[in-house]
Length: 172
Image (cartoon, rainbow, N blue to C red):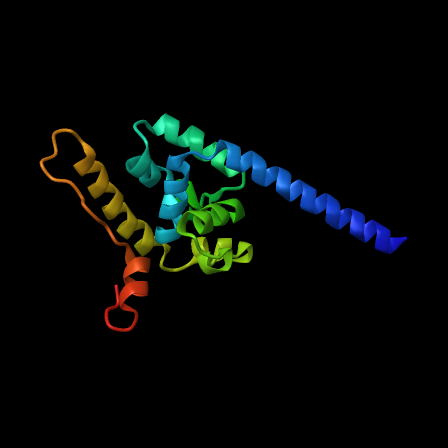
């Protein structure tokens, strides 16, 4: 009897996962894919930073990020400090890792997503540095997107890309 129950539970679980993937796939936009790619590249981004990269209003950013969180595309938390809570910090969740793998044409294992490491990224001693470096990048992008800006960012490579590209030769 337990073997039958195990098969039923596995089949039910697989059906549930397929259903969730279909729901996510039908609602993911090009911008959502770009958000996932940015989270893959920069590891952790705040609401403000994602707004600076991808949205015209902070309200729309908050609303869409909440939807992506509910869909399991991204994960969020508000780290605490001795001064209180910080803003929402986002990282990829399992569905987001699938989106990145599909977008880059790579195996999902190559994305490096592990659900047991979500807190590790947030609790990392380098979080403050990561947030500051990402903030510089996102403010720069936001400033050059305005119609009045005489300059544009043609290409930006973050720390992770540079580390992959130059491996031991240059340390970002």
